[in-house]
Image (cartoon, rainbow, N blue to C red):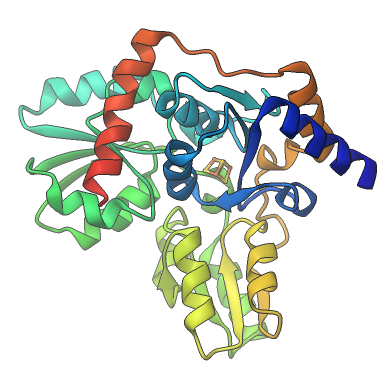
Length: 302
Ligand code: SF4
């Protein structure tokens, strides 16, 4: 492993590269990342870096977002087959249908969407910044794509808006269920339940705190409680345990795993840097159109 890390560091120097990674990665990958965060943090960070090459450890839509925000940089996707199933659930035809049915509609996309979809979207949001952005939208009707769970959660927070929800979902968060969560609570009666808003309504109804990965990490750090049930992807446990070595964290079940995030390995990071694999290639036209919804997000989230 030491040899591999030395090799990655050498390649990073040669290529003037920086490694960005999402919390849901394997621990050995998180250890080699220069910056680790949620989708919003990583999108913002990508606009602030001077390096010529960005190695993006995550799923495809994240690397595409980094490329859209940095069209002149090389953005390397470490494993081309790492995709977000939810990002593939929405189509342009879905958007066209709703636009035809409503005169006054704002298309709001969770950042977990493909760049070909972002070009038809008015503004992107993340689970961390949606609360700042939704109140600034003038339209009454909001078509929220693709996550029905995050959209449904936001619809409750903003009853003055009419949310039309796309039926997409994150398979990892959707399969956590209320009955299993209640069983976990019986096993750990003193634990507070932290849930990501991608979870279904049943789980969110039992949660003590609902927020983005960064929101959960901040909540735990500031809480006097020392036990938590985490209704999110298991990768989060690494950061939580590092920051809070005396606190205890429990999953609902052991299958809270995003298999696509786990495809990224340190060996693949080295191969990606060495062989220029797999550079994100998007047309100038697509970048220009998709960038508007990401720029609007960064602007409106301020
Ligand atoms: S955890 Fe869910 S939303 Fe995140 S990349 Fe995996 S499938 Fe997509």
